[in-house]
View (tube, rainbow, N blue to C red):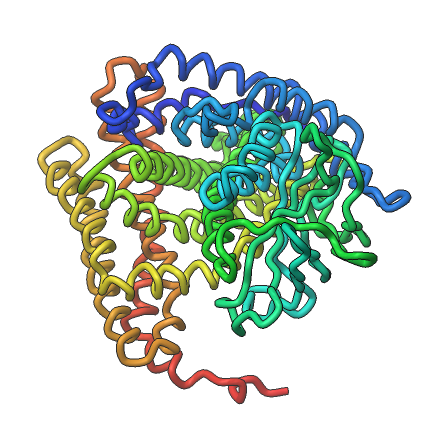
Length: 589
């Protein structure tokens, strides 16, 4: 079983040459210079490789358990979380007023790639905490911020998000959890399920963000409010004191991410759990979407991270495993000499390169939406919204293929748990499901993001892609530019078809949504692959081996991955009638 190596050179190249972090320089007084970024990511790599990665396989085997109403996490996780917290990693992009370091979010994203690849189950705890921190930062009162943010940004307290109920999954309108006013607070009563890291012993307190309904609240999502419900109520000094009426009922037995306790949580079995309103009454969905959008970008990053981990293990195995003869039949060779194994490895690598580029382009765009001003900020806000469902949906779909290919490269040994590669596929399988299934991401893209502004934000993105393609057609990457151009024309036509169908009948239109999301993912991936190649060929700091690597990656992607976009386009352009005819009677039973 190979150990994880933090791909710092690929990350730095993607940030600087593809995502173009220098776009932020005019807007940030204390910009992250090259030496500082190198130092931060160097230390992040050590944390991932030396502290968090070694407990990945053992955590998968041990899992978590409930003892005396408390969740006990796998061995080594508490110590790893302490090292992570004491290193100040969770507060990298947090508000300095509350103890954060105020760095751009792309720095935290680059750090988190390593944490997530090293140990996906472990990484979910800080991911949920970061979402809770952002929701509190943007929507809570100053009093609540003062009480909770410093400890959360220091990693002394963790955070969770509590949406799902037994009868309310993706349909949040069905939420039944109640919030009853009680002087200056509320009493929360109800059950939540699938709560990631809902309980553990790694921090002194756990701050649950809970969706619930006030008495006489409007029906549906318009009647949902958001509350802070701490595991331990705070005493007069702001420290954890009396236990709140919050109880873990059980932890789920899952296919993967075994070391991450997925909890059934009960609020208010006795007198009612004390909760504090975040934002305005009946405006909980708005605040919760802050967490969800943060988490959706984070889940896309998880897709990249687990893919990188699986690829590294597959590559190491292919280099050392001898099987079969060379072409001349003169000696036994490592399986990396076989064309089909090379095909699988480059299918993995080329997609990972494209996924990483998209992750960091989206991260820089998100930073622009916060730090820029005027038209630049307006454009960045729209572009960030557009990227989010593609980052979450397309990337996590690719992760299914990549982690499966890692098993295939291992052959029969990949099917044996002891090799460890199966864990990556098991862990990755949750990614298209949680934080909004990928079907929901696709509907979000085609509905909220495409249809709501009549395609303005999408056409702006396609125009930017076209402008670069025109520039590349005059360069030594012109062959690749032409391949991107052909798919770009298909994407324009598909966009118009989707807009037309959404206008005529949204039900039919959303039937095309998944194909549209995947089409845009493949196109954006190709665009950024050629951008990376163009930058690599003009970067004197890269040696010939590095430039050749980008050449192989971009070429393979354009010839073997990008053509999938034509299938997606065909589905959109010619599949409307078949979608229209589908109903429950199409399935004989």
